[in-house]
Length: 304
Image (cartoon, rainbow, N blue to C red; front, side):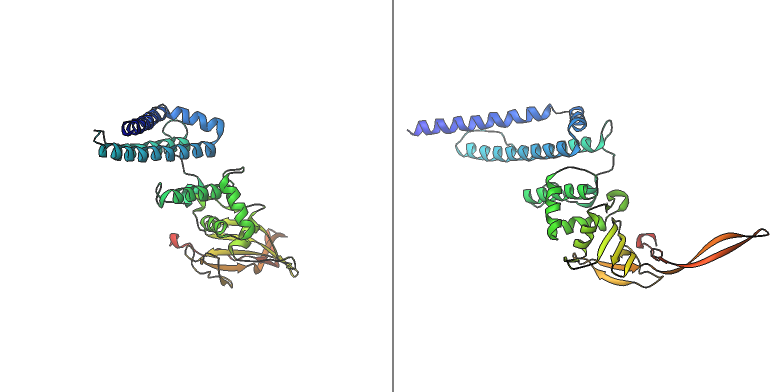
């Protein structure tokens, strides 16, 4: 009976080892050209998700193999030591594949990252599996919010659901874009931008409120838009205090977003506008009028 149990256990271990060693063969056959073809036919986001799942499976197989090695060694079976070097090589391979996905043909490791990658940092699997998945969802949400990608990705669906509730996940995504580098991240604008602004600034409009927001753009340390009430419409601008100096022209107020960040808010103010016209005899005269304009933006701290 004991021999039978040992035989079954040994056969199970052999089957696991066969699966383990057959897996890297399949992975080794994946070339950069195949990755680029997959990106062209399926799209960047779909391929990235597939590679991410493959990567997790590979690490799981290696971890299992280490346990099998230890168990077989305890039985007195002499086995090799699977692990450290293979994991390191797998990490390098994963970076190479992701670089091919981002870069395209020939030397594709130099193309700029997506907005999500630019705003959401963190090393692979730092914080465990849940941390890696969370960052992937957040990157996907940032890409969708800025219009970098379209469609019903999991990150976008999670962002939309959270946005409708004014949830923390949506506000984190909005904050990343609002305080991000405009050249790398872009901005949130369009139909959903007003809802994003209200959520991020903690504005809870009920059905009885007559205040609405339009022409909203969020990004690069600035938020601009138009506020409409019963008294009329006014343009406004907000500047993140970590990125901008205090406004030196016109009145301003200090407000806080839901993430605790501080912003300088300015409304459009009365400004004299001069319109030139020909007064005859080669002279130019001006027609003066009072218009509402937002004061010039204050200096950026990184430009001083």
